[in-house]
Image (tube, rainbow over all chains, first blue to last red; front, side):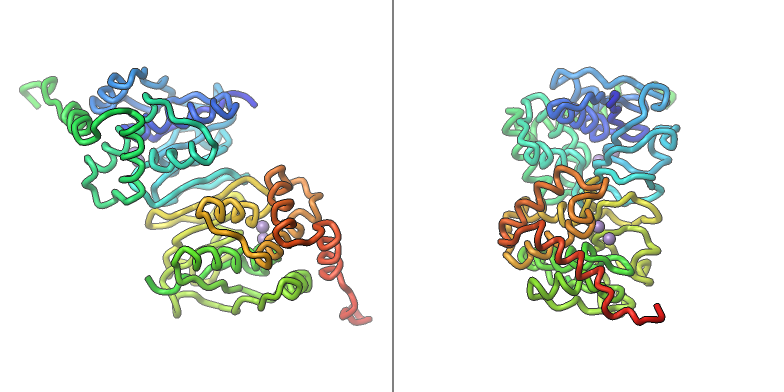
Length: 198
Length: 198
Ligand SMILES: [Mn+2]
Ligand SMILES: [Mn+2]
Ligand SMILES: [Mn+2]
Ligand SMILES: [Mn+2]
């Protein structure tokens, strides 16, 4: 099997970036040559999370087919949110928490969607199902995704399962979720680089 | 929450019937008012499996919306294979092992597809994930589904995961999978009621 690209959606948010890095890590642990990539610029919020937990941003791609025949989608499934040449590659897996629309495949695949507030909450289960431990820095990144998608545990899409995952991940990452979460959201809302004209 | 109907595909095969009964049972164990239903006649093969393990055929329905607002699809996802008024109800979950096509939702849902040979193989995992024990007669029905979809463990879609599930289920059901499986397939191929003119 050639390299598999793990791809979040266009205009990536923290969940799309964190879940791509996280799931690529999990796949590597179970023997798959997986690489996280991104389809757009990193936000300030995401940059803060990456820096806090010691990660580089995933590599930016515009097309997948020139370098691989197989991709995994995280945090999205709709074609218009995905890589432009999605039709030219095989979607091996989808891990997502959104409705399903404008998505179809020619072959059976692993598709795991759950009606929870964040892809990272599902990934937290997948680590357990595969018996793989979550490293401290990955846990911090996953927690960042839950904080981001739930606006610090306040959004109506935030479920008990997200809550439980956030508590587990904060313990592994050894951070205070409320304190770190607020710092991350503040970093994302930083207006210091906005010019006077804006 | 009102009753949830668990529905296999039209022209139901043994996997569609067995998985509807099995998943309705699992949902009931975790507190959901679920009922297995079917969209067509039972085959001789399926009748043999139901009788062997002491089950009635699920209730036949033509439409879902007159009696419920929520359904779970097993062993299929394509709209044309499903209940005629699928657009009039909410699909809460899908448990399937086929490609995804002609399927979309307005809301997030639980969607569990895996590239294995039988829906029952996925259900075997879900029992474990929920910590629910599989009763002896349900295990027999699930084994019947794997035998059917794999033509007694021979089809190209049959995977190591199906093999492992079949062995576990045969042990719980206390049957010899090869012997029982051949008897079931023979019952399905029974030509005794075919008239001379056919
Ligand atoms: Mn997102
Ligand atoms: Mn998300
Ligand atoms: Mn079927
Ligand atoms: Mn099947």
